Image (cartoon, rainbow, N blue to C red):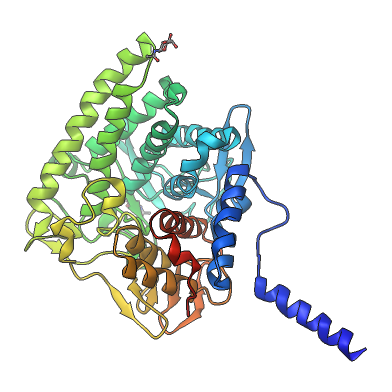
Amino acid sequence: MNFILIAFSLLIVNLLAQSNQRPSQKKFVSEAVEKTIERISEKMKDNKLKYTFINSFPNTLDTTVTNYDPSIPDAFVITGDITAMWLRDSTNQLWTYMEFVNQDSKLQNLVKGAINRQVNQVLIDPYANAFNYQKKSSEWSNDNTTRCFLGVNAHAMSQHLHERKFEIDSLVAVLRLAVGYYKETKDASIIDFKYLKAVQRILRTFKDQQADQTEQFATFRFPYTFQRNARSTDTVINGIGEPVKRTGLLRTFFRASDDSTVHQFNIPENAMASAILKQTAEMLSEANLSWSLRKAADPLIQEAFALSSEIKDAIYKYGIKDGAFVYEVDGMGKQVFMDDSNQPSLLSLPIYGFIEIDDPLLSVQPIPIIFVGTAAKGIGGPHIGANYIWPMAIVTQGLTTNDKQEIRECLRMLVTTTGGKWFMHESFFKDNPSSFTRSWFAWANGLFGELVLKIDKEYPELLEENYA
Ligand SMILES: *[C@@H]1O[C@H](CO)[C@@H](O)[C@H](O)[C@H]1NC(C)=O
Ligand SMILES: *[C@@H]1O[C@H](CO)[C@@H](O)[C@H](O)[C@H]1NC(C)=O
């Protein structure tokens, strides 16, 4: 009798220790992804590594593809614990699986569906960062955000939008998803007139945020304003931000963390824009388009190449101090020395192909906000605040180094700081990872998966080690 009880409790303990937390009802199942989970997890001896990978890598497919219509195709991909689709997050969430689209036509169609959805979203409002599936009110409905329409600043928050924070990288994310998809598949069917219209709208928006503000100030007509009755990182001074000089750089009101900028020329945001605009122009040049699409695409190609190099030149002119990139500038001498935990950060720039990972301009880091605790050492930022380290920043560090020992240390910190949940979080307390923010953050989960895929290709032996 006792023996049976003991055996039974051992079984329970054993099941808990295994901790496969994947839902039984999965939103989307990809055969190629499932095979990869099986192949890679088999090698893993450390349970923390194994189950964090098993749970995190498929998290976007398992839980966030809330609406998918394969016939259009159309895909609405939520960020996780908020039921809205972020342009930035959805691109990154699907990026994790991009290398499998040629092995899995269902997965390929899903990515196409997300591209279609994003194109529609940009055409609804290029200044928004997050969208509702259908019209509904959001917790940010009362934000005071305007667009200049027929010479008047008109209220611009609409029910299609979850939030209307303008950040360059939201629009860049839309370009990047199409570029990544095309690069993998060479499928030019995503490039239709609607897509080209979205590219045109993105270029137009960027140029509006590159323009000299003198006339806007004189008439008080701004293409975009934003104010919220909230803490300083969630609102914009006077609705338009501190003044900047025309430099060729694009103004961004918010950072990738959705925090407002100190100076609107954010260097990582601009660098990512420069790199992806160029890649978009290259894709449009290379793609086999019909005569009429070609005619519509050619002027956009010229514009995108020109804007890309104008931004790049300005980064090298205004965005460097003492041999290193700085984080934000105003073009008149003021600079912010830091790096943030979210992507795009300075550290992440090699991921977008703006620079190589051994670029000397990254060798002297401009004082990232590093917190050192008993659990880990890593970058945090103003979004959550002091002493909270972001797993995403540790993954970024691992993705942008070839140093095996550094990658091993990143992997160790990541799998020992899940707070017993076997998932990535937005941030955790430096001395106690069971104090964390965001229990369901699909992008960070996918990024961890990407790091494991990289390690599997470059240093597979690290997957067989134990991490404590
Ligand atoms: C809303 O923002 C606009 C533009 O910054 C500003 O002119 C207006 O006074 C604001 N309205 C309120 C109610 O704060
Ligand atoms: C380009 O597309 C046309 C029409 O779809 C096709 O006939 C042609 O073979 C394609 N050319 C190349 C180089 O793929």
